[in-house]
Length: 94
Image (cartoon, rainbow, N blue to C red; front, side, top):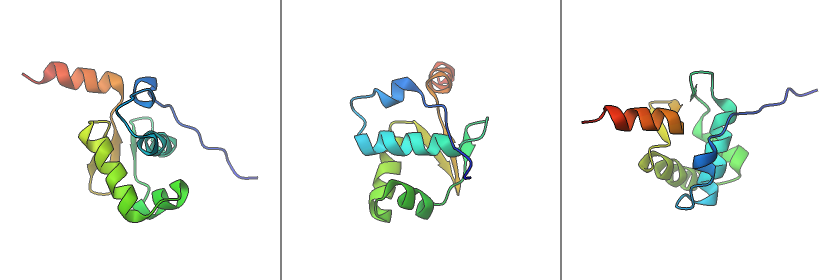
């Protein structure tokens, strides 16, 4: 039997009407791979396969999430920025 995956998804991000439906789905997908420190490293090919989209489409989706500051990418590592972390970051910036 295959082990189930689940992830904690920030409701504010899923309910962001300015975010495309695909971007919300990929954010949720990334959350299923995330560790307790909200980092994960699935390959772009894996994300494409799981989301059933082309590499080019996935790159656009990831760019959308990065522009909205919901995901940060450090090389092959994706860092998921939850609402709480985002608020903390906004407070610290002068």
